[in-house]
Length: 241
Image (cartoon, rainbow, N blue to C red; front, side, top):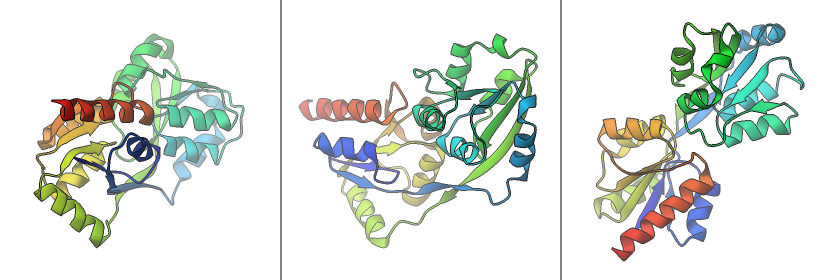
């Protein structure tokens, strides 16, 4: 059985191939930094007024890194290894919880009481979840600024044809999603296949289930290495069965 990874060819796909899995990459969505970032620039000018800055994606972290030099007064909080690693490489001190897969888990592990009465900034994408705002409502003064959007990507005709044939012939065992927008884009393009879905996190899995996908695996940690290892194990288990 083959695996369709709904993203570009990266370390996740490479790990699967090293594990003997045939992978077809279908990059249906991407991120695009906004042309107009005046809102961010205004907040950067008064960054010292903030006690903390939140990042839940490496894209948002990258936009910040391009415009701000370390060190800074506010504490930087990052969800996910990629965002935290990028910020640290740029010289920033970062607080994170490596075992947190969602913003809700991160806030629970950090403890929302630490943000009582604080002034915070959330640098985010256009379609980021409202978890941070909702969890900190009535606790902290939170500003939000959108710095990127999610855009659709057209597949090559050959790749789209290949995936349609494989899905029709039930030759795809798993479809892998890394974001809610990827699940939505796949459903819009290909419908709901009989293949199982593997998701990198609970938020994406929830959207996939709502759309009607058969979610058979949710990675225990939202990192490529863990996701790939657990999917390979699930594939081997099915083969044995």
